[in-house]
Length: 141
Image 1: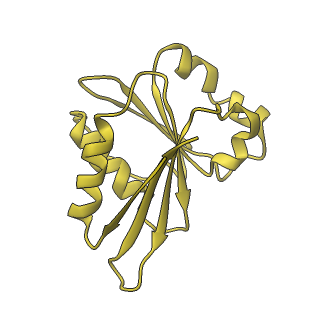
Image 2 (image 1 turned 45 degrees about the vertical axis):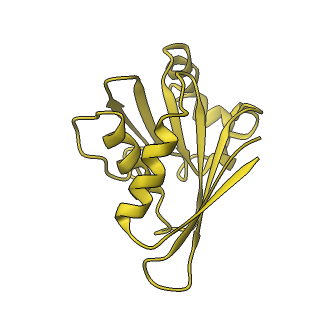
């Protein structure tokens, strides 16, 4: 089942993220899908805030992996853009993070290939008709 949200502000994106945070369980993998600037990092900021993260969330584009300890669980924000395949993804600690019960928030999840579990969350961001408008679709496949 897919849920769809039309948002028109950062606050709207954060509200969707806050509701989504209630669904997360340790070991979940969340695939963040969408164009550059579509809202993936903004959503992650809202999610981390809802879970009580103390540190600011920025895009992990250059460092690839950023850990965000929260009151409920460890969030691990990964940007796989610079990686080539699942073997590369394994070298950054994928299995270790899952063994620790971390929630993996994965940008460019196609790079992980078969490492993405069949029950992963898929959060898709689509640009809307105005500069601030976004459509956020949430599904567990």
